[in-house]
Length: 111
Length: 111
DNA sequence: TATAGTTACTTACATAAAGTAAGTATATAG
DNA sequence: CTATATACTTACTTTATGTAAGTAACTATA
Image 1 (tube, rainbow over the protein chains, first blue to last red):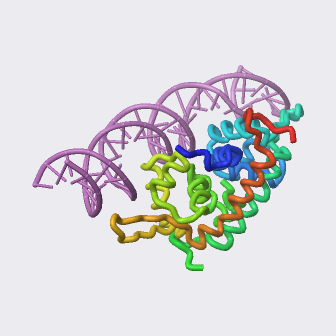
Image 2: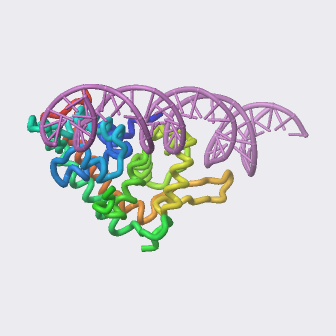
């Protein structure tokens, strides 16, 4: 019951970032603004869940939905400053993965 | 279809870390070795899922299960070097949360 | 010896989240 | 009018998680 030991900001951040796909979507958008179908195929997420996640991330001010009334209309998703600020988090995960994840099996690394 | 754009190590790391509770469990264990019930109550996770996660994290060499044949037997979970190496990731999430997460509403921060 | 308590789980079942596939809306091209 | 494309939404299935009860091993108390 002592959830009090956790910083509520951290807890909120974790509830966002520990959702499936959220990290990969942000990582993908760090490469630049992209369309729905680009993200969809890049990370092999289902359209249903991508739609859900993008709406959620937009609601949290992490992702921005840009509509270009071209012909045909083009919609691009990009990261806000809040979203771009997550770059160091993803970078640290990459660093860790480089050092500690082995590809052959999923067992423990002896490094 | 082009999953090739993702580093497979990173992808593997994300599939672990983006599971619900994984981050909070590691964050909790960064405070030191702890018993099952301590983790359970600290982060309000259900015993069923905690058991599942600890087994998975142990399998991946991130968590170590220490059995002390005392009376009564004491079982403590701690982080391996691989697990301890995740500290910078959690730290970056904390930094981000400090700067960008507001507590009142879940909307976008204007910072 | 019987009863109850504690820890670390496991099992059975219910609900929530995610995957799959088809459908809709809007627009252009032919 | 038909076909194509993008960005979704909807209906349905599968998987993950939550809840609550149960089990195993041991201790403490009556």
